[in-house]
Amino acid sequence: MTTVADIIAWFEKRGSTIILGNNVNVNQAITRPKAIDEALEEHVTFISSKYKDTYTTLLQNTACKCVIVDQDLFSIEMITRYSDIVFIPSENPKQDLTGLIQGLFNPIKTLNTSFIHPTASISAQAKIGENVHVEAYAVIEGNVTIGHNSSIGAGSVLKSNTEIGQHVVIGANNVLGGDGFGYVKNEATQEYELFPHLGGVVIEDHVHIGNNTCIDRGSLKDTIIHQGVKIDNLVHIAHNVTIGKNSLIIACSMIAGSVVIGENCWVAPSSSVRNGIYIGDNTTIGLGSVVTKSVGAYETVAGNPAVPLAELIKLRQLQNAQLAENSKEE
Image 1 (spheres, rainbow, N blue to C red):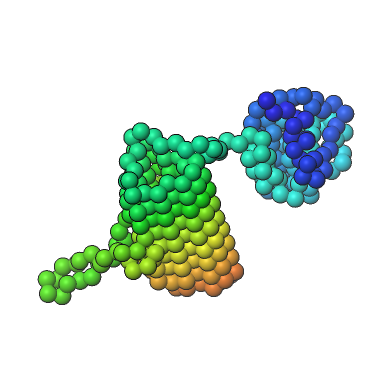
Image 2: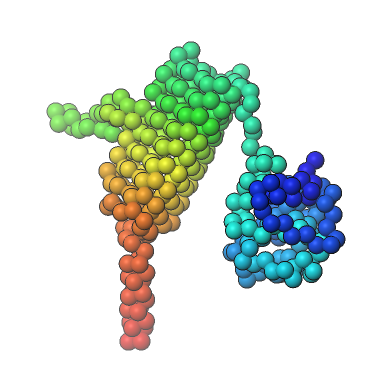
């Protein structure tokens, strides 16, 4: 059982400041984290800077007794007004709560033993590391490598020439290593013939892939997902794509063939990236954008076709001004 005292000790070991009122019950059991607007006495919660306009009301209404709070929102008067609450001022409350969850609550399955579900189909030629979990009805073909402490969700298919690193989490019903959509027109017959896909898929360490996502094998080289990349549900990544370290590809995105995405990029939901283009490091692709040409580093683009955000805002302002002018004329 985790208590308020355990949470205090966890943060103190990391050098965090702990602010306790006179009426704090350090023996209060804490069962789990909970959102501030639903948290009860048995929960731990956080208040980030996005609540700067409502945090006083949230504190007045919460029954929670353990709150990680943005340090810019915290004031010493709080410990008098809320003497039964433990406050942990933080530069990044959500990140600190994430660490606390991993340290004390650990909802993510710890892979300290290997597990292969009896309905999973695994080729004798596949190489499976230590402490790997393979869930029901997963299919792992020959010439597949899975590193230590990785997990393969139910119904996922890992085709030949797929390499999975260590500490990789693959959700349910994914297909990794299928043929890409690459065809050559036969001029004699006027029919489209599949271009041979002889490459593979490389998934490096600490990559997370959600559910119902497809990552195609390369044609003459590999499709590569570098270390720390997080890929959401319902994403399509085509052949020969490279995605740089720690980039996030969000739900319903489509990355076409031979695209190179740099490190620390954010590709927002329902975005489409045209084949063969380059996206530089630390770049943000806005919600629902259609990217038709290469984007440099440290840029934010949005729209259809995607343009730099400042340009898009200016365009919208001009459009609104024109609409207003037309309205006056009518």
